[in-house]
Amino acid sequence: MSKLKPCPFCGKPAYLDNVFPPLYKIQEWIIRCPTHGCFCNTDEPHIDKIGKVIAWNTRPIEDELRAELEKTIDNFEIYVMQTGEEIDVLRAENERLRECIQYFQQTLKVRTEGIA
Image (tube, rainbow, N blue to C red; front, side, top):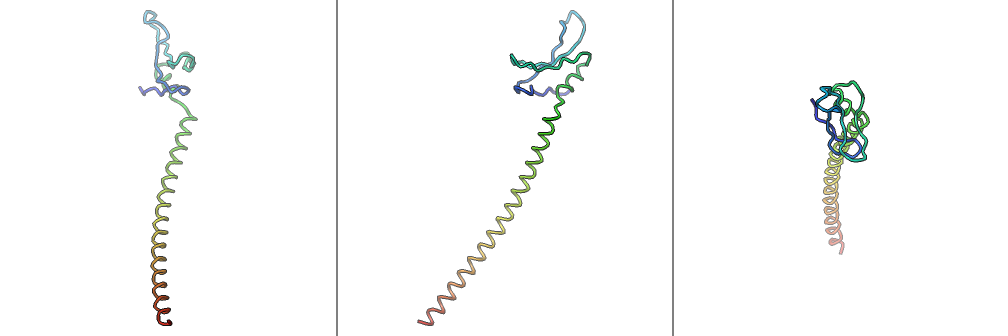
């Protein structure tokens, strides 16, 4: 059986409980949040223990948000890599332009010394 996800409202660990005391020999399971005042539980009748866990752990909005977050992180990582490559290209171009400026400064200095 899968592990229970935490309470979707307060984040505390949830627990699986049998509604009936052991004497009744009836198993009606409920998943509850331990936080006082947080009325989050699965109380659908006639669903077995595994069904309750599946119902509790099924959170389509949360799953969709996680998928969107993963996609955003992947896109950001790609952007950072591309930006890093672009920065490397710009640094190389910057170095090339510095060398050009130094060459022209030296050339200009030589030419102006010849005039003086």
